[in-house]
Image 1 (cartoon, one colour):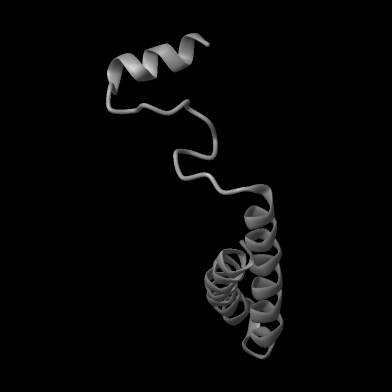
Image 2 (cartoon, rainbow, N blue to C red; image 1 turned 180 degrees about the horizontal axis):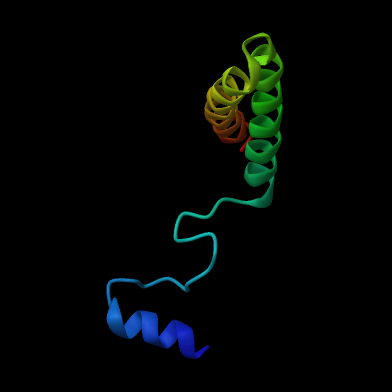
Length: 80
């Protein structure tokens, strides 16, 4: 509890409790959709990048993560 008071003293504009989620936290279902879609996107990108070796897999895995994050958030917003 002392940590929260120190943060609020140093940053008075923070009028929300300090949590790992931050002020714009979404419900658990949104987090689940986002997590699942990023995992699927990164796996698909990694699989598609295997013909180009490790770096190709890594780069396409990151692209797949971004695409999965985007569509997972959109899916969660439509679900709500």
